[in-house]
Image (cartoon, rainbow, N blue to C red; front, side, top):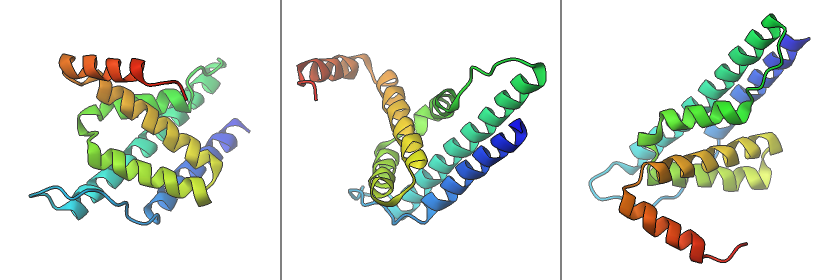
Length: 151
């Protein structure tokens, strides 16, 4: 029963990754000297890698916990956070724009499960970018967030 549940989850997640590939290409501001199409392709591949790694890590953790007869405290959020943090150096504006484009499309026509995963990825990506900022930018970011009225 458990393995069937995990297999369905993995299949759904891997299917999510495949469905994301069919989403129209995101619009991004052109960067001088860069091949924008190649950069968007890199961002899409990075997003696929994050989803695939998180799915695989979750499956391993749940299977191990089940085999040991223990409760699994590791969830998809933990798996996504780890996968995003591992790639923190690659999270640039093209990746964030690509991710935002996917979120917009899935909000309109995609399954809720995929939207929740993409929103978590965005949350962890923003966190990772903030942590890797130089101290001066962290200070400015803190000022902006404190001065910004709550939504």
